[in-house]
Amino acid sequence: MNWLAKGRLLSLFTLMALVLAGCGEPYVSTLRPAGEVAQSQFDLMVLSTVIMVGVILVVTVIFLIVITKFRRKNENEIPKQVEGSHKLEILWTVIPILLLLVLSVPTVAATFKLADVSPMDKVNEEGKTDALVVNVRANLYWWEFEYPNQEIITGQELVVPTDEKVYFNLIASDVKHSFWVPSAGGKMDTNTENVNKFYLEFDDQKANEAGNLFYGKCAELCGPSHAWMDFKVKAVSRAEFDQWVDDMQTAEEPQAETALAQQGEEIFNQSCIGCHAVTPQDGRPEQARNAPNLANFGERSRIAGILEHNEEELKNWLDDPETYKPGNKMTNTYGDLSDEQLDALTEYLMGLKVQE
Image (cartoon, rainbow, N blue to C red):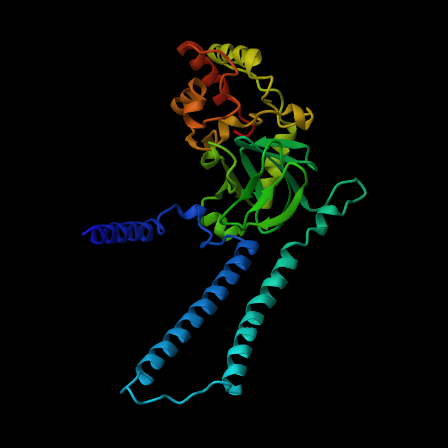
């Protein structure tokens, strides 16, 4: 009876695994490519899957034929021996080689193509690159995006133009992380000791279908809040991107308009300003940027990358960030805030906007 109970339990877990394998959000699926890189990698996945399924089917058919046609009919019958058959040896040697060539040639070609980041190293007369370059810095547990040519720094939300290659310099400030936008392409590690480089491209039509918003994640186990280390990608047209860049470059120090927001600004300047910045042109060195840039916090789609963007969730985050992201660096950086202070700080942060 024990083996029967264990068998039922194993069957239940197998069924659960099969069902849960189909669960998930479409915006974190690699099976819905939204750009050149993702489409190339998806095509390779399909090719390898077709080859593997084809091999399994052929082997299964041969297996069934053999156990049916060549089964022993009586005790005295000895089947025909085929040991040393040159034809069979050639077949089972040549066919795998051909299948490997079919898979390896496009794989190697795609690998070299996707590794070509030479445009990000070519500078013009102004000392800048013609290609759009973004420096990505991964931290526990947030993301920083620096546009060196545009002299803009953002946190948690990456803005890119569609239908053109965007090149990335990837590095980590503390431990190993991994930069991954499932709909746009495969992941790449961010290390503390070296810079990894690659590019992505976002298809304009796919971006429109997705509401111009894609989701990125950390794909390397980095600590207790690894699962919550998310970021958002806004993929917009080149004209919209240029407008965003212009707005960010001309943004000035935000001014609190209401009395409550002014109180929040005072609280922010007393405790938060040491880590955060409220202007896109953050001139501090990388080592001094210990927390996300909040210049456009009021325009974001998420709080801390995971919470709904509203006042209630912001107060929850400010009151107890450890509950939502265990091990984050914001925990215990300031004393307990009263309800009045939370209201004031929330009013101020929600008013931090670059584009109206």
